[in-house]
Length: 344
Ligand SMILES: *[C@@H]1O[C@H](CO)[C@@H](O)[C@H](O)[C@H]1NC(C)=O
Ligand SMILES: *[C@@H]1O[C@H](CO)[C@@H](O)[C@H](O)[C@H]1NC(C)=O
Image (cartoon, rainbow, N blue to C red; front, top):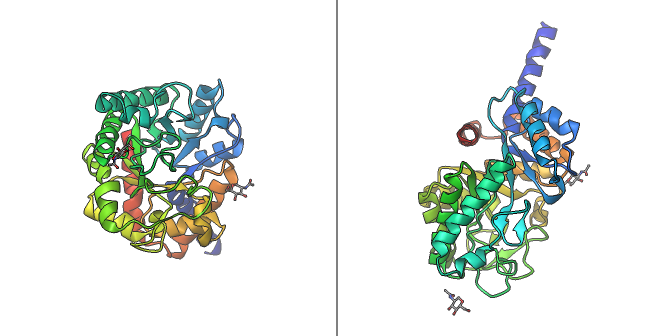
């Protein structure tokens, strides 16, 4: 009886690890995926991988093929989400399209066409490298020349209508080429100043809800109507509204994004190790549980080491086993992610 019991226990825990893993995007250092990552993929603990410049060399296709080969042995019979930040201009991990920045597109004579072509170019580039998801386009509406979004030309425009058109066209250009899009950083980082970077430290945005809705959230309406697959909430705190970073806030994720705007797709976090989350402690597993309980579907473990992904998956699995994660909400979240994976 005792040994039968412990084998059931063991099955339960490997199932919990697989369920937890469906919510975590992993990263690694260097060009060759480490064997520990391949092993975790085979065990079904990896929903996807984010690539940075140091992961990309002339053998990228071989490396991605080895990730896919490992995934073919996973009990989770779904494609990996293979993603990067291919925004355009200065923010590109892969050489090639889109070469124009969002700012150049938004200020061109035909922003709608240029945005569609940029989305198409980004998607073709990703697909030719074996990827299926872009962490772009940025639909932040910048406020002041040289501010956080404008300094690298990441915002299409300071005019929300232009951002709205460009964001939707970029999404459609990617969708037509089989690549899922991520609009970011909800509800908007356009009002952040030049040195207000949530990767580095806490950022507070003091705009009222009316301006946030009319200016910053406005492009999400067109993106959602255009079928955008993912939304990345920001790690900024919107102080007039509540005291949590948007990605940790049930108000922003559930009430505003899913409720008011009707988004039914997948939410993906910004870097879980970001300096902007310092008030949540330094444990990325605990941070992940806070984000999940606020309604976040995917956790981005972008610290470029495999142990970060492993620790987050272990922490989520433990919470599943202890019943401290809402089972119905988590199941709904898992099914949104699985639907996305099966579509790619
Ligand atoms: C955008 O910037 C331009 C140039 O500085 C300015 O003329 C225009 O009024 C701004 N538009 C908005 C909506 O702030
Ligand atoms: C992995 O990355 C996380 C997030 O940046 C960091 O906290 C952790 O110390 C790193 N671990 C190793 C072994 O490098």
